[in-house]
Image 1 (cartoon, one colour):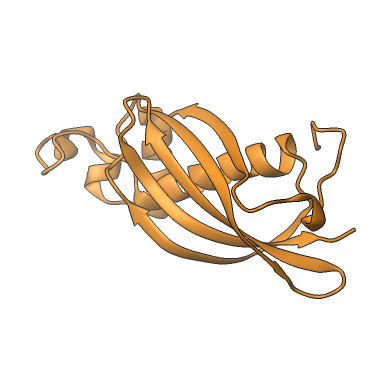
Image 2: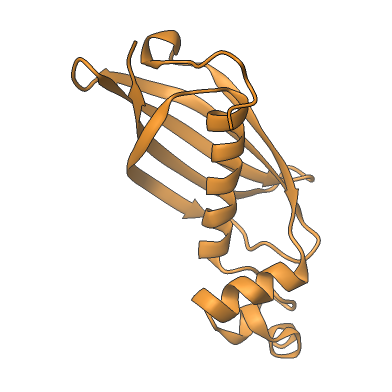
Length: 151
C-alpha cells in the first residue's frame, strides 16, 4: 500500500529528481538461501569453499544483488514516493561493481534521467539506480525504464 497519500503521475515528475531508496543489511543466511534456490555456486552457498576463493569469503550472487535493488526501488519509488508505476519496460547497463558480503549495509538512490510520452494514458520514466555500501563503495548500478500512469 502506498504510504504517501498523494499518488504521483507522469506529469508530476521531473528529470533530475532524486530519491533515497533506503538501506538494507544483507545476512549470511539470506545469501545462502537465495543462492541455494537460484545460483547454487560454492562462493554463494558454502562459507568454507568461499574462503578459498578469490573473494576470501562468502559473497552474494549478482542476481541477489539485483533482487535487493528491485525491493529498494519498490519500497522507495512506488510505496514511499507514490509514483504510479504500471510495469517495468527495460533494464540497461546493469553493472555489478563489487560483491556483497555478509553484514554489508546497502544504501540505494535513484534519479530520474528521462521522461517520454508513451500514449495518452502512460509515459515512460527512466531512472538511474545505484547501490553502495555504508563505506560508499558502489556495488550495483543500472538504468531502468518503467511505464507510469498519466493523469
